[in-house]
Length: 257
Image (cartoon, rainbow, N blue to C red; front, side):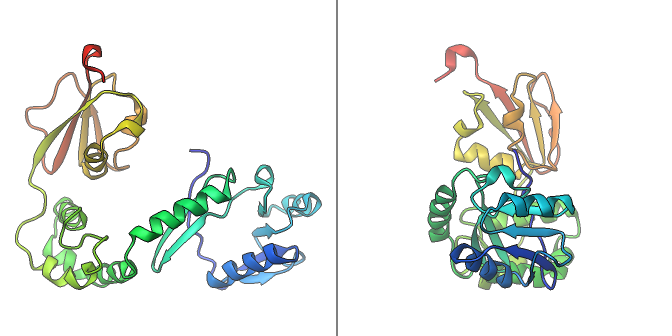
């Protein structure tokens, strides 16, 4: 990963925009949608978009400590602008580090077609229900398991269902805590994380802890939740613990596909 994706709150904040023409107009519209206050080069601001990629302008602003996006000049950029899917308050950003805006656009169009128009309504409903969710599942681990189960494929509040926002009250009233305590085994036939099955990738995104043999590649372990506990072990555990635990091991060479 060459960049850290972040979402900047720009409401009422100054952003320098330089250049003229269609590119500048497009960037101005984007900044105004985000609530930014668009200013010229002489104003005081900490970020800037140089819409014509002018190197002299980039140099002047960088000398002032301003973070810069230079259109079509990725080598001059401190940050890049992604393709955006807007289902406010849900935002999905797709970036290529400046390698190909066309690829980012194509990916945006395909992903956008999968997402229901009311995805933002689900996010708002979950936000409004935070107090009720905490009351329903006071234990943080149980709460996370219930949320994971609800949002899973086919779950009561599956985000790809257009009816998910309306189902939040029924989900809150359901019995049980979501996924039962269990250990799932993932046998890896490749060191490439792109070769993970959909099920294995989903388990890695949900697991509370990941037990793994010493030869499991870091690239695979990096696909697990950031806050999942990673535990090197010589063999799968007899008592893995609460929630969803995984045991990862490499398949013997003779079993490789």
